[in-house]
Length: 454
Image (tube, rainbow, N blue to C red; front, side, top):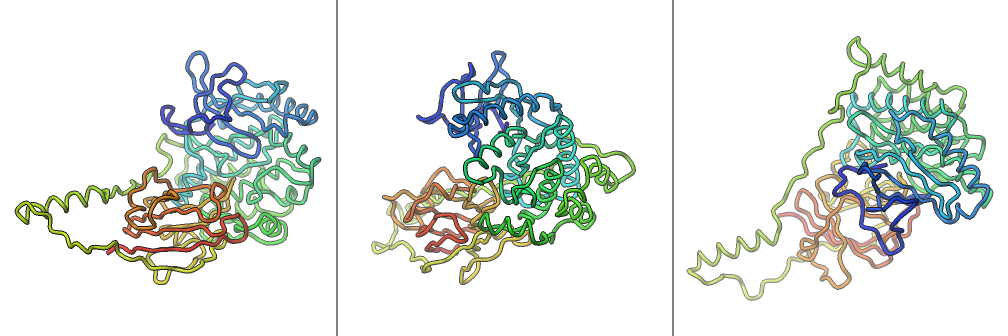
């Protein structure tokens, strides 16, 4: 369902992962979410497929199985053009599963979180493409119920909407178990947040939120606790700062509190066509997305140190000239910092203090507490690096520079109090972060040691 290149996609299977499901031999784990886990496999002819295995708590519910069977059958009727079509499945298996076509592409969530909001032309094509997918899904009698950036893949032929259909079966099961609702609070419609019937227009509200996120890099109703976000969705107006002005009327209609006031997918497409430059219809070339900015490649500090040592050795006639009492440089020590959900730290300012994240300062996000996706994350801007610091590593800048396997995002749930990570920025700053209270909530707490670039 998601990924980029077959040879390097996903993570190796772990000890608690199955090796085969329904005759499909699993090659890697693509991801996981509220419904279950997704694995990469292949058909006998070698075509890649994504196999979704449903969580045990849903599998144990007979009512869920009946709804799941119905929704998978409906999902099979959805045209393949704008989605990842359902190819196979077994709702009656001990652990229900289904297989869909594998769509090479990066999720909208990853693209925006790494590179910021989309320019207007690809944004317009995104909105029209997702609306077209929703029209096909609704035409098959299915309501998505969990449309969000992570469920939109940006492929060469346009956006593909995935994970539709089965959310309805899970939603009813969750409600019978405790009043919760399956779905991502940040992108829910008001009626869904209130536990009322979810209709096709609910997906249009989510499309409006998705458009704001794609344009600005932030959720329309902010970040924070689920209860706070849901309250704002139901009772307050969205923040549309940064949305291109030509799109504002359409986005405002999509985000109407009254479902009957929202446009249909066909009306969304028509509005996008009217906004398209020129007089012809919307058209999408294989390079419809803006190019990915190259990641600056810094020389490794170890290599620089070896080069400097060699030069010093030559300059001294064969004797390395280094002072005997050289000490690692001291860093700036910050006490406890409370980092609110949605805010970030910029290591280039003095002193370093939490700042609200928005499109205008996206390039300054060195460490952000992000809560707008499937799980809370610690993120950094593209070109920077996050790395975990092992418990036995010295708390120094050189230890931070020496760590391998950098990334731009780390799941907050993978940390416990006292765990450490390092931030390495494009500007050359290095920071050691010690998480004193990493439990997801309105804010997390941490301490910071900063070594500024010369």
